[in-house]
Image (cartoon, rainbow, N blue to C red; front, top):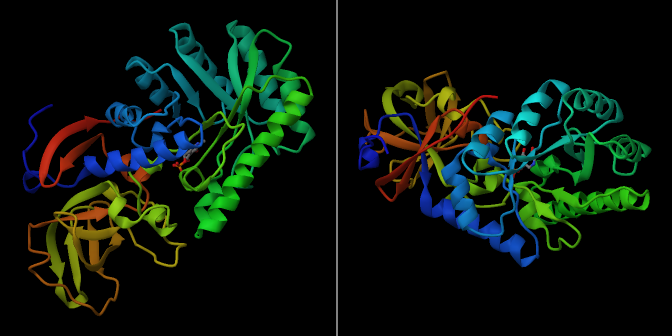
Length: 383
Ligand SMILES: Cc1ncc(COP(=O)(O)O)c(C=O)c1O
């Protein structure tokens, strides 16, 4: 570890803190839940892009491979000994050469696609590369994003294109119920989780009945993974943000604010007292532009402001953000602030809306236990 201060109070700002005990608790919570349902987690490392965080996840148990969102992540994790990798963003032919190189180096990487035309393009490029790619068909189980309709003829058409040739091997189906981010009650999260599971099982069954292999049935998002109560027939659950949690997750009642393991440490750089504003050095460059709680009943601005120890200060949020300036005020604009709570050059912690977006603003995390710095963990960026 390069020279890092011993105490949080000595850290340069802005920086990204991870509370190790909370991280481990969040990891154990989902590992135990999925383990009790007889299944395994394929953690999505896009949340942190960190080898060290992934090692903590593995220590939590019930882990089967990893999920990545970029080939850069795939390369980085493979170089650090992870070989069972699902690249869970629809593939394009221009990425196949890089995937082929990873496979030739011994990486067991799986790719995804969701339509017959792309299957055709991939097949053509695979022939040129003389390489056999392992493919999962992406399903649309909630109308949120990409994927093929699990009930459609297209699903079978894709399978037909992928099977019966030596360049593509169909290994299963995968889906991500992103619409669970609009589910605010336990009942709605459970219903979404069952929908994600049941439509995936239906697609797998249709493929098998049509004579195609479908060994893997991969589902998951943090809200559905915590809500699901039966995983019979599912081979893995993917989740990412659950390791840190964030204000979106606490707004959805997947966790509470005390579970959030990540925060941004910021310094008070000034005030606009007539406007009840405290200015800090953590703007959107540190917090990210993600306003994920904007659609929630409680809009948390660019983050919830706590004291240096992470304790509640009252109802203060980062109400607005410029690139390197955070504008902090009470949720009630007429409510002032005390200089004791926000001393000039003093520090505050800001809980993020979306931990994945905030983490991506930094190239390392500062790992803390109470007021002590215990490690510095690098993360990877880029594509
Ligand atoms: C394909 C895929 N799988 C899994 C996840 C993990 O979801 P979450 O961060 O809600 O756990 C994501 C997140 O965007 C995803 O895109």
